[in-house]
Length: 393
Image 1 (cartoon, rainbow, N blue to C red):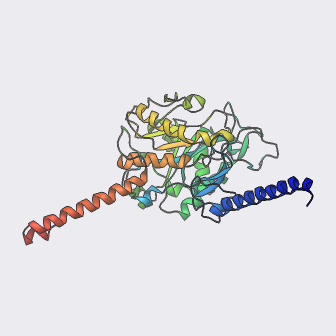
Image 2: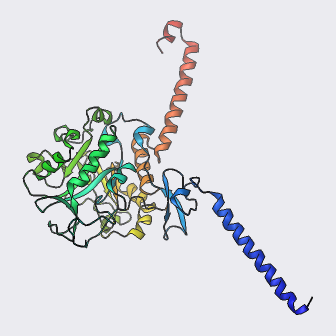
């Protein structure tokens, strides 16, 4: 062997070892989880790698590469029960639910406005959103959904006729007979009975929860189970006070308090009411809404916004709202997060509301522990009580 060729041979062998080790490492990573086996926070290469209820997301501000994060809500009614008043539960709200990336133009004019969500409304509902924020305007002789300014809809700010989105909601309610949906309207419709007409045309009036049944003075709402049994499963709130009397549509701030939206509402350690709402500690309003989204939606920042900072704000707003936990939490790009995101935020809220725990799943453990302790006490009583008393336990 030529001694001059020896270093080259060693180099080649080392290079081959490095390549082999790298390939093995990559294969090992790929083989560590795939085909629906990847869990929360695991690295992934596609949605198909992640378990049910998760999807594969890149969040450069939160982690390197792509990881499995949550994509669906925990159904509090199925996990526990629906036997409590409506205001004893928490729900995910999608801010500007209609302002969807890639939504086709209905005016043949390029749209020049912001978007706030990635999924269509049906997918939002299927993934667990139960409150939808919509902006309604008079436009082209009808009611349209627009992301506009100064109360006027334009060809370049319009998304589409409201009836299209309302029909999606009707389709969801008709196929999910135990679900309740809340619609919160930023309302600019001035046409007489304009909203009544579009809700009627969409087939939604059969689900309508009457404003006369909504509690005032801080009382509890009806039981969720009763709302379902009565098929009164659609709550609609408007920002125009006069419509409560003229159209029977609830004026939002007669029934809920709401914090300031936008960048001001995201200031750490501060939670103040928006100007239309009474003070957050006003207990004459039974519902609490917490907004947590930027004035200008930033998709790349939303995965960080919808994570730890959101959880911290819910704690802050609870203190500001007289130690009441939010019933609705509204966000942009609701599926984007560093892990649990807005879904974990709702789990926290339901845990706090239902059993004083930090997660709704802990309520199940508390209930099981209670049942076990109750069973043990009954067994002990049966050992010491007379026969005629045992039979009554």
